[in-house]
Image 1 (cartoon, rainbow, N blue to C red):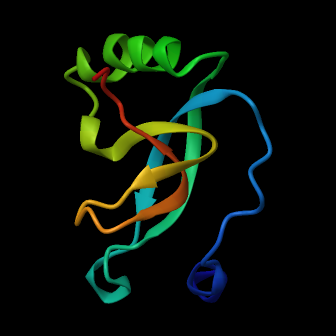
Image 2: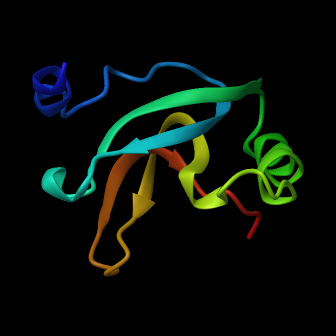
Length: 98
């Protein structure tokens, strides 16, 4: 089982048009805290704004959840690198409206 997790480094092509609230399953220190898997908990939502609104209602305002373990997953899009030097493709979106 652990060998399967270590080999899994990429997600299949994400062709969906909807958005989901997903829990992230991260590896431990021996796996460099990398994303190993995710579970969709809510969705599908047709727009990012709708998913962000539900994220706030279901996750942020709920003391039972650690909000940093959840995020929004959706169609592949270009996002800017934190360092500011270019973009990359991602299926992960910001949890909050800008």
